[in-house]
Length: 309
Length: 275
Image (tube, rainbow over all chains, first blue to last red; front, side, top):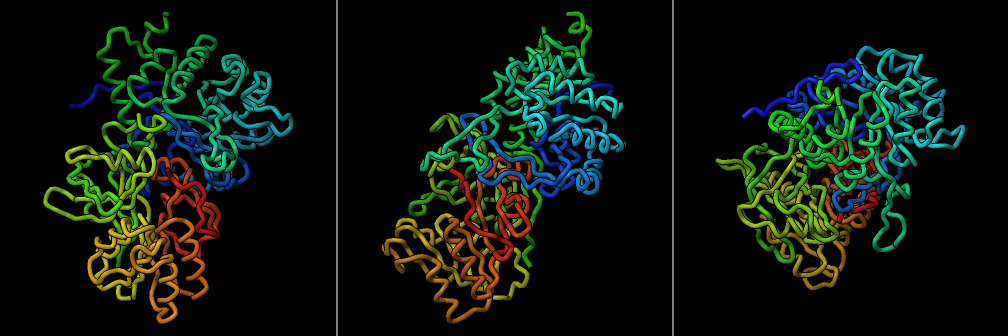
Protein backbone atom coordinates (compact mmCIF):
# COMPACT_ATOMS: atom_id res chain seq x y z
CA UNK A 1 0.00 0.00 0.00
CA UNK A 2 1.45 3.31 -1.03
CA UNK A 3 0.11 6.09 1.15
CA UNK A 4 -1.38 9.05 -0.63
CA UNK A 5 1.16 11.77 -1.09
CA UNK A 6 0.33 15.11 0.45
CA UNK A 7 1.62 16.63 -2.74
CA UNK A 8 4.20 19.27 -3.51
CA UNK A 9 4.41 22.40 -1.43
CA UNK A 10 5.87 25.76 -2.30
CA UNK A 11 7.72 27.48 0.51
CA UNK A 12 8.85 31.01 -0.35
CA UNK A 13 9.19 30.09 -4.01
CA UNK A 14 11.12 26.88 -3.31
CA UNK A 15 9.39 23.77 -4.62
CA UNK A 16 9.29 20.94 -2.10
CA UNK A 17 8.11 17.37 -2.65
CA UNK A 18 6.01 17.60 0.51
CA UNK A 19 5.52 19.66 3.65
CA UNK A 20 7.82 17.95 6.18
CA UNK A 21 11.07 19.54 7.38
CA UNK A 22 13.37 18.73 10.23
CA UNK A 23 13.67 21.19 13.08
CA UNK A 24 17.12 22.77 13.05
CA UNK A 25 19.52 20.87 15.27
CA UNK A 26 17.42 17.72 15.48
CA UNK A 27 18.94 15.73 12.63
CA UNK A 28 22.58 15.55 11.55
CA UNK A 29 22.43 14.13 8.05
CA UNK A 30 26.22 13.70 7.91
CA UNK A 31 26.37 11.62 11.10
CA UNK A 32 23.22 9.73 10.09
CA UNK A 33 24.89 8.73 6.84
CA UNK A 34 27.72 7.17 8.82
CA UNK A 35 25.20 5.18 10.86
CA UNK A 36 22.78 4.19 8.10
CA UNK A 37 24.82 4.49 4.89
CA UNK A 38 23.23 5.44 1.59
CA UNK A 39 19.89 4.01 2.79
CA UNK A 40 19.52 7.44 4.37
CA UNK A 41 19.56 9.08 0.93
CA UNK A 42 17.21 6.50 -0.61
CA UNK A 43 14.68 6.89 2.21
CA UNK A 44 15.35 10.48 3.16
CA UNK A 45 12.71 11.45 5.72
CA UNK A 46 12.33 15.17 4.99
CA UNK A 47 11.24 17.31 2.04
CA UNK A 48 13.63 20.12 2.99
CA UNK A 49 16.71 19.74 5.14
CA UNK A 50 17.49 22.43 7.73
CA UNK A 51 21.09 22.50 8.95
CA UNK A 52 22.15 22.72 12.52
CA UNK A 53 22.58 26.38 13.48
CA UNK A 54 25.99 27.73 12.57
CA UNK A 55 27.78 30.65 14.16
CA UNK A 56 30.73 32.72 12.93
CA UNK A 57 33.21 31.16 15.36
CA UNK A 58 33.41 27.42 16.08
CA UNK A 59 31.69 26.33 19.29
CA UNK A 60 32.25 23.29 21.51
CA UNK A 61 28.77 23.53 23.00
CA UNK A 62 27.69 23.28 26.62
CA UNK A 63 29.27 21.03 29.24
CA UNK A 64 27.43 17.74 29.82
CA UNK A 65 24.99 16.56 31.01
CA UNK A 66 23.02 17.99 28.13
CA UNK A 67 19.80 15.97 28.29
CA UNK A 68 16.96 15.24 30.69
CA UNK A 69 13.88 13.17 29.89
CA UNK A 70 10.57 14.69 30.98
CA UNK A 71 7.06 13.25 30.80
CA UNK A 72 6.54 12.98 27.01
CA UNK A 73 9.50 15.15 26.24
CA UNK A 74 13.05 16.20 26.66
CA UNK A 75 15.05 19.11 28.01
CA UNK A 76 18.25 19.78 26.12
CA UNK A 77 21.06 22.23 26.65
CA UNK A 78 23.35 21.51 23.72
CA UNK A 79 24.75 25.00 23.21
CA UNK A 80 25.02 25.07 19.42
CA UNK A 81 28.24 23.12 18.88
CA UNK A 82 29.38 23.72 15.31
CA UNK A 83 32.49 24.11 13.19
CA UNK A 84 31.93 27.81 12.63
CA UNK A 85 31.11 29.51 9.34
CA UNK A 86 34.35 28.64 7.57
CA UNK A 87 34.38 25.02 8.71
CA UNK A 88 30.73 24.58 7.77
CA UNK A 89 31.19 25.97 4.28
CA UNK A 90 34.32 23.90 3.63
CA UNK A 91 33.42 20.56 5.27
CA UNK A 92 29.68 20.24 5.83
CA UNK A 93 27.99 22.13 3.03
CA UNK A 94 29.40 19.92 0.22
CA UNK A 95 28.10 16.85 2.04
CA UNK A 96 24.69 18.39 2.71
CA UNK A 97 24.47 19.29 -0.97
CA UNK A 98 24.39 15.54 -1.72
CA UNK A 99 21.04 15.19 0.03
CA UNK A 100 18.09 14.57 -2.30
CA UNK A 101 16.15 17.64 -1.06
CA UNK A 102 16.64 21.43 -1.00
CA UNK A 103 18.74 22.87 1.79
CA UNK A 104 18.05 25.57 4.37
CA UNK A 105 20.96 26.82 6.46
CA UNK A 106 20.27 28.03 9.99
CA UNK A 107 22.45 30.84 11.31
CA UNK A 108 22.83 32.64 14.62
CA UNK A 109 24.84 35.77 15.31
CA UNK A 110 25.63 37.42 18.59
CA UNK A 111 25.48 40.83 16.93
CA UNK A 112 24.00 42.26 13.74
CA UNK A 113 27.48 42.39 12.20
CA UNK A 114 27.91 38.68 12.82
CA UNK A 115 24.49 37.96 11.39
CA UNK A 116 25.34 40.00 8.30
CA UNK A 117 28.60 38.12 7.85
CA UNK A 118 26.81 34.76 8.11
CA UNK A 119 23.96 35.66 5.78
CA UNK A 120 26.25 37.18 3.15
CA UNK A 121 28.56 34.16 3.12
CA UNK A 122 25.82 31.55 3.09
CA UNK A 123 23.80 33.42 0.46
CA UNK A 124 26.68 33.17 -2.01
CA UNK A 125 26.37 29.41 -2.13
CA UNK A 126 24.14 27.96 -4.82
CA UNK A 127 23.57 24.80 -2.75
CA UNK A 128 21.54 26.84 -0.27
CA UNK A 129 17.88 27.50 -1.09
CA UNK A 130 16.75 29.24 2.09
CA UNK A 131 18.27 30.79 5.21
CA UNK A 132 16.78 30.45 8.67
CA UNK A 133 17.59 33.12 11.24
CA UNK A 134 17.78 31.62 14.71
CA UNK A 135 17.01 34.60 16.94
CA UNK A 136 16.96 32.68 20.22
CA UNK A 137 20.18 34.22 21.48
CA UNK A 138 21.11 37.50 23.12
CA UNK A 139 22.38 40.40 21.07
CA UNK A 140 25.59 40.97 23.03
CA UNK A 141 25.42 44.67 22.16
CA UNK A 142 21.96 45.24 23.62
CA UNK A 143 21.60 42.30 26.00
CA UNK A 144 18.16 41.50 24.58
CA UNK A 145 17.22 38.08 23.26
CA UNK A 146 16.78 39.04 19.61
CA UNK A 147 13.65 37.01 19.01
CA UNK A 148 11.97 38.03 22.25
CA UNK A 149 11.59 41.66 21.24
CA UNK A 150 9.69 42.91 18.16
CA UNK A 151 11.88 45.95 17.54
CA UNK A 152 15.13 44.02 18.02
CA UNK A 153 13.85 41.43 15.52
CA UNK A 154 12.74 44.10 13.06
CA UNK A 155 16.10 45.90 13.17
CA UNK A 156 17.98 42.66 12.56
CA UNK A 157 15.80 41.62 9.63
CA UNK A 158 16.03 45.11 8.11
CA UNK A 159 19.80 44.90 8.27
CA UNK A 160 19.88 41.44 6.64
CA UNK A 161 17.12 41.82 4.07
CA UNK A 162 19.20 43.74 1.47
CA UNK A 163 22.05 41.22 1.67
CA UNK A 164 20.34 38.40 -0.21
CA UNK A 165 17.43 37.56 -2.46
CA UNK A 166 17.23 34.13 -0.88
CA UNK A 167 14.21 33.59 1.35
CA UNK A 168 14.78 34.47 4.99
CA UNK A 169 12.87 32.45 7.58
CA UNK A 170 12.73 33.90 11.08
CA UNK A 171 12.73 31.20 13.75
CA UNK A 172 10.61 32.52 16.59
CA UNK A 173 11.27 31.77 20.22
CA UNK A 174 8.28 30.78 22.36
CA UNK A 175 10.01 32.44 25.30
CA UNK A 176 8.61 35.85 24.35
CA UNK A 177 5.77 37.85 25.83
CA UNK A 178 3.93 37.90 22.51
CA UNK A 179 5.43 35.74 19.76
CA UNK A 180 2.79 36.93 17.27
CA UNK A 181 3.98 40.52 17.70
CA UNK A 182 7.53 39.42 16.96
CA UNK A 183 6.27 37.54 13.90
CA UNK A 184 4.43 40.62 12.66
CA UNK A 185 7.56 42.74 13.16
CA UNK A 186 9.62 40.19 11.22
CA UNK A 187 7.14 40.19 8.37
CA UNK A 188 7.04 43.99 8.21
CA UNK A 189 10.84 44.07 8.09
CA UNK A 190 10.93 41.76 5.10
CA UNK A 191 11.03 38.18 6.41
CA UNK A 192 9.71 35.67 3.87
CA UNK A 193 8.46 33.15 6.42
CA UNK A 194 8.44 32.42 10.12
CA UNK A 195 9.05 29.12 11.90
CA UNK A 196 7.92 28.22 15.38
CA UNK A 197 8.23 27.06 18.06
CA UNK A 198 11.77 26.76 19.26
CA UNK A 199 12.19 24.99 22.62
CA UNK A 200 10.61 26.36 25.78
CA UNK A 201 12.96 27.24 28.60
CA UNK A 202 13.02 24.56 31.26
CA UNK A 203 15.00 23.10 34.12
CA UNK A 204 15.60 19.79 35.88
CA UNK A 205 17.21 19.14 39.23
CA UNK A 206 19.56 16.31 40.05
CA UNK A 207 17.43 13.91 42.11
CA UNK A 208 20.23 13.43 44.64
CA UNK A 209 21.85 16.86 44.99
CA UNK A 210 18.84 19.05 44.03
CA UNK A 211 21.19 21.17 42.02
CA UNK A 212 20.56 21.85 38.32
CA UNK A 213 21.10 18.65 36.34
CA UNK A 214 22.03 20.21 33.03
CA UNK A 215 25.58 21.44 32.62
CA UNK A 216 24.31 24.83 31.50
CA UNK A 217 21.75 25.09 34.32
CA UNK A 218 18.68 25.38 32.13
CA UNK A 219 17.70 24.10 28.71
CA UNK A 220 14.88 23.92 26.21
CA UNK A 221 11.86 21.62 26.46
CA UNK A 222 10.61 19.83 23.35
CA UNK A 223 8.48 16.85 22.41
CA UNK A 224 4.77 16.12 22.86
CA UNK A 225 4.96 17.87 26.24
CA UNK A 226 4.99 21.25 24.42
CA UNK A 227 2.64 20.45 21.53
CA UNK A 228 -0.47 22.21 22.84
CA UNK A 229 1.53 25.36 23.59
CA UNK A 230 3.11 25.28 20.16
CA UNK A 231 -0.22 24.83 18.42
CA UNK A 232 -1.68 27.86 20.18
CA UNK A 233 1.34 29.99 19.23
CA UNK A 234 1.12 28.89 15.59
CA UNK A 235 -2.56 29.82 15.54
CA UNK A 236 -1.78 33.21 17.13
CA UNK A 237 0.94 33.92 14.61
CA UNK A 238 -1.23 32.78 11.69
CA UNK A 239 -3.83 35.34 12.75
CA UNK A 240 -1.25 38.13 12.53
CA UNK A 241 0.89 37.43 9.46
CA UNK A 242 0.44 36.53 5.81
CA UNK A 243 3.86 35.00 5.20
CA UNK A 244 4.06 31.19 5.29
CA UNK A 245 4.53 29.48 8.64
CA UNK A 246 6.66 26.45 9.43
CA UNK A 247 4.94 24.90 12.43
CA UNK A 248 6.60 22.61 14.93
CA UNK A 249 6.53 21.51 18.54
CA UNK A 250 6.03 17.91 19.55
CA UNK A 251 4.69 16.71 16.20
CA UNK A 252 4.76 12.92 16.35
CA UNK A 253 2.05 11.81 13.90
CA UNK A 254 0.20 12.84 10.78
CA UNK A 255 -2.71 13.79 13.05
CA UNK A 256 -0.48 16.26 14.90
CA UNK A 257 0.87 17.61 11.62
CA UNK A 258 -2.68 18.04 10.28
CA UNK A 259 -3.55 20.11 13.33
CA UNK A 260 -0.60 22.44 12.75
CA UNK A 261 -1.61 22.80 9.09
CA UNK A 262 -5.18 23.50 10.14
CA UNK A 263 -3.84 26.14 12.54
CA UNK A 264 -2.15 27.88 9.64
CA UNK A 265 1.18 26.20 8.94
CA UNK A 266 2.29 25.72 5.34
CA UNK A 267 5.01 23.26 6.36
CA UNK A 268 5.60 21.27 9.50
CA UNK A 269 8.87 20.33 11.13
CA UNK A 270 9.67 17.16 13.02
CA UNK A 271 12.29 17.30 15.74
CA UNK A 272 12.24 15.27 18.91
CA UNK A 273 10.21 12.47 17.33
CA UNK A 274 13.18 11.80 15.03
CA UNK A 275 15.19 10.91 18.14
CA UNK A 276 12.77 8.02 18.72
CA UNK A 277 12.71 6.97 15.08
CA UNK A 278 15.09 8.44 12.51
CA UNK A 279 12.49 7.75 9.80
CA UNK A 280 9.69 9.54 11.70
CA UNK A 281 9.54 12.45 9.21
CA UNK A 282 8.69 10.11 6.38
CA UNK A 283 5.98 8.31 8.39
CA UNK A 284 4.44 11.61 9.49
CA UNK A 285 4.42 12.89 5.91
CA UNK A 286 2.75 9.68 4.72
CA UNK A 287 0.13 9.85 7.47
CA UNK A 288 -0.55 13.49 6.67
CA UNK A 289 -1.02 12.55 3.02
CA UNK A 290 -3.66 10.00 3.94
CA UNK A 291 -5.46 12.49 6.18
CA UNK A 292 -5.43 15.22 3.53
CA UNK A 293 -6.92 12.85 0.98
CA UNK A 294 -9.47 11.07 3.10
CA UNK A 295 -10.76 13.52 5.62
CA UNK A 296 -13.61 15.78 4.71
CA UNK A 297 -12.99 19.28 5.96
CA UNK A 298 -9.21 18.99 6.03
CA UNK A 299 -7.75 21.70 3.86
CA UNK A 300 -4.05 21.86 3.16
CA UNK A 301 -2.92 25.42 3.65
CA UNK A 302 -2.03 25.90 -0.03
CA UNK A 303 -5.53 25.03 -1.21
CA UNK A 304 -7.70 27.73 -2.82
CA UNK A 305 -10.43 27.07 -0.25
CA UNK A 306 -8.12 27.98 2.60
CA UNK A 307 -6.84 31.04 0.78
CA UNK A 308 -10.43 32.22 0.52
CA UNK A 309 -11.16 31.76 4.22
CA UNK B 1 40.15 -8.73 12.51
CA UNK B 2 36.87 -7.54 14.01
CA UNK B 3 35.73 -4.42 12.20
CA UNK B 4 34.25 -1.80 14.47
CA UNK B 5 31.05 -0.77 12.65
CA UNK B 6 28.17 -2.46 10.89
CA UNK B 7 25.67 0.01 9.45
CA UNK B 8 22.04 -0.08 10.55
CA UNK B 9 18.91 -0.25 8.42
CA UNK B 10 17.32 3.20 8.31
CA UNK B 11 14.49 3.71 10.77
CA UNK B 12 13.00 1.97 13.77
CA UNK B 13 11.85 -1.60 13.29
CA UNK B 14 10.23 -4.22 15.48
CA UNK B 15 11.94 -7.35 16.76
CA UNK B 16 9.82 -10.04 18.37
CA UNK B 17 10.71 -10.99 21.95
CA UNK B 18 11.46 -14.71 22.14
CA UNK B 19 12.59 -14.99 25.77
CA UNK B 20 12.97 -12.99 28.95
CA UNK B 21 15.06 -14.89 31.46
CA UNK B 22 16.40 -14.10 34.90
CA UNK B 23 20.17 -14.28 35.19
CA UNK B 24 20.69 -13.75 38.88
CA UNK B 25 19.46 -10.22 39.58
CA UNK B 26 19.51 -9.27 35.89
CA UNK B 27 17.21 -9.93 32.93
CA UNK B 28 18.38 -11.34 29.62
CA UNK B 29 15.99 -10.36 26.82
CA UNK B 30 16.15 -12.26 23.53
CA UNK B 31 14.46 -10.89 20.42
CA UNK B 32 14.35 -12.04 16.81
CA UNK B 33 15.44 -9.27 14.47
CA UNK B 34 14.43 -10.33 10.98
CA UNK B 35 15.36 -7.10 9.21
CA UNK B 36 18.69 -6.13 10.72
CA UNK B 37 22.22 -7.26 9.95
CA UNK B 38 23.39 -10.59 11.38
CA UNK B 39 26.85 -9.25 12.15
CA UNK B 40 26.69 -6.31 14.56
CA UNK B 41 30.16 -5.64 15.98
CA UNK B 42 30.89 -6.26 19.67
CA UNK B 43 30.51 -2.96 21.51
CA UNK B 44 27.91 -1.60 19.09
CA UNK B 45 24.52 -0.79 20.57
CA UNK B 46 20.82 -0.58 19.76
CA UNK B 47 18.23 1.98 20.80
CA UNK B 48 15.47 -0.01 22.46
CA UNK B 49 11.85 0.71 23.27
CA UNK B 50 8.73 -1.36 23.80
CA UNK B 51 6.20 -1.16 20.97
CA UNK B 52 3.38 -1.08 23.53
CA UNK B 53 3.21 0.92 26.75
CA UNK B 54 6.35 2.95 26.18
CA UNK B 55 5.29 5.81 28.45
CA UNK B 56 2.88 5.97 31.32
CA UNK B 57 5.30 4.49 33.82
CA UNK B 58 6.88 6.26 36.74
CA UNK B 59 6.76 10.06 36.14
CA UNK B 60 4.77 9.30 32.94
CA UNK B 61 7.98 8.05 31.36
CA UNK B 62 9.76 6.48 29.48
CA UNK B 63 9.62 8.66 26.41
CA UNK B 64 12.98 8.25 24.68
CA UNK B 65 14.46 4.91 23.62
CA UNK B 66 17.26 3.45 25.75
CA UNK B 67 20.73 2.56 24.46
CA UNK B 68 21.96 -1.00 25.07
CA UNK B 69 25.01 -2.83 23.80
CA UNK B 70 24.00 -6.23 22.53
CA UNK B 71 25.28 -9.10 24.63
CA UNK B 72 24.96 -11.74 21.93
CA UNK B 73 23.96 -11.93 18.28
CA UNK B 74 22.93 -15.43 17.22
CA UNK B 75 22.29 -15.69 13.46
CA UNK B 76 19.52 -18.10 12.45
CA UNK B 77 17.35 -18.94 9.49
CA UNK B 78 14.68 -16.31 10.20
CA UNK B 79 17.01 -13.54 11.26
CA UNK B 80 19.38 -12.77 14.07
CA UNK B 81 18.45 -13.31 17.70
CA UNK B 82 19.76 -10.37 19.69
CA UNK B 83 20.27 -10.65 23.40
CA UNK B 84 20.25 -7.68 25.76
CA UNK B 85 21.30 -7.76 29.34
CA UNK B 86 19.61 -5.32 31.70
CA UNK B 87 18.59 -4.37 35.19
CA UNK B 88 15.43 -2.45 36.06
CA UNK B 89 16.63 0.83 37.57
CA UNK B 90 14.28 3.44 36.07
CA UNK B 91 11.08 3.70 34.01
CA UNK B 92 12.75 2.66 30.73
CA UNK B 93 14.63 -0.36 32.03
CA UNK B 94 11.64 -1.35 34.16
CA UNK B 95 9.41 -1.55 31.09
CA UNK B 96 12.05 -3.40 29.08
CA UNK B 97 12.53 -5.87 31.93
CA UNK B 98 8.79 -6.64 31.79
CA UNK B 99 8.78 -7.54 28.08
CA UNK B 100 7.01 -10.82 27.49
CA UNK B 101 7.46 -13.44 24.81
CA UNK B 102 5.80 -12.30 21.58
CA UNK B 103 5.88 -8.58 22.45
CA UNK B 104 7.39 -6.09 20.03
CA UNK B 105 10.77 -4.63 20.87
CA UNK B 106 11.36 -1.44 18.90
CA UNK B 107 14.95 -1.09 17.81
CA UNK B 108 17.29 1.09 15.83
CA UNK B 109 20.75 -0.25 15.23
CA UNK B 110 23.40 -1.52 15.35
CA UNK B 111 24.86 1.90 16.09
CA UNK B 112 28.19 3.38 17.04
CA UNK B 113 31.70 2.00 16.88
CA UNK B 114 32.52 -1.21 18.70
CA UNK B 115 35.79 -2.67 19.96
CA UNK B 116 38.59 -2.44 17.45
CA UNK B 117 40.50 -5.71 17.60
CA UNK B 118 43.54 -5.03 15.45
CA UNK B 119 45.36 -8.29 16.12
CA UNK B 120 43.08 -11.25 16.85
CA UNK B 121 46.01 -13.30 18.16
CA UNK B 122 46.98 -10.78 20.79
CA UNK B 123 45.92 -11.61 24.35
CA UNK B 124 42.66 -9.93 25.32
CA UNK B 125 41.74 -8.96 28.87
CA UNK B 126 37.98 -8.52 29.20
CA UNK B 127 36.97 -6.40 32.15
CA UNK B 128 33.31 -5.97 33.04
CA UNK B 129 31.53 -4.18 35.85
CA UNK B 130 27.93 -5.21 36.49
CA UNK B 131 25.71 -4.80 33.45
CA UNK B 132 28.88 -3.76 31.59
CA UNK B 133 29.54 -7.46 31.06
CA UNK B 134 27.17 -7.29 28.06
CA UNK B 135 29.46 -6.11 25.25
CA UNK B 136 32.26 -8.30 26.60
CA UNK B 137 30.06 -11.35 26.09
CA UNK B 138 29.74 -10.34 22.45
CA UNK B 139 33.49 -9.81 22.21
CA UNK B 140 34.18 -13.14 23.92
CA UNK B 141 31.96 -14.83 21.33
CA UNK B 142 33.74 -13.11 18.46
CA UNK B 143 37.31 -13.89 19.54
CA UNK B 144 38.61 -17.32 18.65
CA UNK B 145 41.18 -17.57 21.36
CA UNK B 146 40.69 -17.69 25.07
CA UNK B 147 40.34 -14.36 26.84
CA UNK B 148 41.27 -13.50 30.38
CA UNK B 149 37.90 -12.34 31.73
CA UNK B 150 37.46 -10.42 34.98
CA UNK B 151 34.10 -9.33 36.29
CA UNK B 152 32.99 -7.19 39.19
CA UNK B 153 29.54 -7.24 40.78
CA UNK B 154 27.76 -5.91 43.85
CA UNK B 155 26.81 -9.31 45.32
CA UNK B 156 26.61 -12.99 44.46
CA UNK B 157 23.12 -12.50 42.97
CA UNK B 158 24.56 -10.27 40.29
CA UNK B 159 27.64 -12.45 39.89
CA UNK B 160 25.40 -15.13 38.36
CA UNK B 161 26.07 -13.27 35.10
CA UNK B 162 29.49 -14.95 35.02
CA UNK B 163 27.78 -18.13 33.87
CA UNK B 164 26.97 -16.53 30.51
CA UNK B 165 30.64 -16.59 29.55
CA UNK B 166 31.91 -19.61 27.68
CA UNK B 167 35.26 -21.21 28.43
CA UNK B 168 37.05 -21.22 31.77
CA UNK B 169 35.21 -19.43 34.60
CA UNK B 170 35.93 -15.69 34.76
CA UNK B 171 37.65 -14.20 37.77
CA UNK B 172 35.05 -12.44 39.89
CA UNK B 173 35.15 -9.76 42.55
CA UNK B 174 32.13 -8.61 44.56
CA UNK B 175 31.71 -5.48 46.63
CA UNK B 176 30.61 -7.48 49.69
CA UNK B 177 32.74 -10.56 49.14
CA UNK B 178 29.64 -12.76 48.82
CA UNK B 179 31.17 -14.33 45.72
CA UNK B 180 34.78 -14.45 44.54
CA UNK B 181 37.19 -11.94 45.90
CA UNK B 182 35.98 -9.01 47.98
CA UNK B 183 36.89 -5.79 46.24
CA UNK B 184 36.77 -4.27 42.79
CA UNK B 185 37.39 -5.77 39.40
CA UNK B 186 40.26 -3.30 39.09
CA UNK B 187 41.98 -5.12 41.98
CA UNK B 188 41.94 -8.23 39.80
CA UNK B 189 43.34 -6.24 36.90
CA UNK B 190 46.18 -4.82 39.01
CA UNK B 191 47.19 -8.29 40.14
CA UNK B 192 47.08 -9.62 36.62
CA UNK B 193 49.19 -6.81 35.24
CA UNK B 194 51.84 -7.41 37.91
CA UNK B 195 52.59 -10.77 36.34
CA UNK B 196 51.71 -10.22 32.73
CA UNK B 197 51.42 -6.93 30.90
CA UNK B 198 50.96 -8.26 27.39
CA UNK B 199 47.67 -7.66 25.60
CA UNK B 200 44.85 -5.17 25.32
CA UNK B 201 42.24 -4.39 27.94
CA UNK B 202 38.63 -4.21 26.76
CA UNK B 203 36.40 -2.80 29.47
CA UNK B 204 32.83 -1.78 30.13
CA UNK B 205 31.25 -0.77 33.41
CA UNK B 206 30.30 2.17 35.59
CA UNK B 207 32.24 5.42 35.14
CA UNK B 208 34.36 5.15 38.33
CA UNK B 209 35.47 1.67 37.29
CA UNK B 210 36.36 2.78 33.77
CA UNK B 211 38.25 5.77 35.14
CA UNK B 212 40.28 3.42 37.37
CA UNK B 213 40.93 1.13 34.38
CA UNK B 214 42.02 4.09 32.30
CA UNK B 215 44.49 5.26 34.96
CA UNK B 216 45.89 1.77 35.64
CA UNK B 217 46.38 1.05 31.95
CA UNK B 218 47.98 4.44 31.33
CA UNK B 219 50.37 3.86 34.22
CA UNK B 220 51.29 0.34 33.03
CA UNK B 221 51.37 1.38 29.38
CA UNK B 222 48.74 -1.20 28.42
CA UNK B 223 46.32 -0.25 25.64
CA UNK B 224 42.72 0.04 26.83
CA UNK B 225 39.47 0.25 24.91
CA UNK B 226 36.65 1.51 27.08
CA UNK B 227 32.97 1.14 26.24
CA UNK B 228 31.39 4.21 27.84
CA UNK B 229 27.81 5.12 28.53
CA UNK B 230 26.16 8.50 28.51
CA UNK B 231 22.55 9.62 28.41
CA UNK B 232 21.43 9.54 24.77
CA UNK B 233 18.27 10.75 23.10
CA UNK B 234 18.77 9.45 19.55
CA UNK B 235 21.81 7.17 19.24
CA UNK B 236 22.75 8.29 15.71
CA UNK B 237 24.35 11.69 16.08
CA UNK B 238 21.26 13.86 15.79
CA UNK B 239 20.84 15.35 19.25
CA UNK B 240 24.46 16.06 20.32
CA UNK B 241 23.43 15.15 23.86
CA UNK B 242 25.83 12.31 24.69
CA UNK B 243 29.17 14.10 24.42
CA UNK B 244 32.19 13.14 26.49
CA UNK B 245 35.33 15.24 26.87
CA UNK B 246 38.33 13.87 24.98
CA UNK B 247 41.76 15.24 24.14
CA UNK B 248 40.17 16.45 20.88
CA UNK B 249 37.25 18.20 22.57
CA UNK B 250 33.75 16.86 23.05
CA UNK B 251 32.82 13.85 20.96
CA UNK B 252 29.42 12.24 20.55
CA UNK B 253 29.55 8.83 22.16
CA UNK B 254 26.88 7.48 19.81
CA UNK B 255 28.77 8.07 16.56
CA UNK B 256 32.42 8.37 17.69
CA UNK B 257 31.98 5.75 20.45
CA UNK B 258 30.73 4.14 22.61
CA UNK B 259 34.12 2.42 22.53
CA UNK B 260 36.87 4.98 22.98
CA UNK B 261 40.61 4.37 23.38
CA UNK B 262 41.65 5.08 26.96
CA UNK B 263 44.45 7.40 25.88
CA UNK B 264 42.01 9.63 23.97
CA UNK B 265 39.99 10.41 27.06
CA UNK B 266 40.46 13.26 29.49
CA UNK B 267 38.35 11.27 31.93
CA UNK B 268 35.98 8.33 31.92
CA UNK B 269 33.87 9.98 34.61
CA UNK B 270 31.11 10.89 32.19
CA UNK B 271 28.49 13.08 33.85
CA UNK B 272 24.81 12.36 33.30
CA UNK B 273 24.44 8.61 33.38
CA UNK B 274 21.10 7.45 31.99
CA UNK B 275 18.24 6.39 34.18
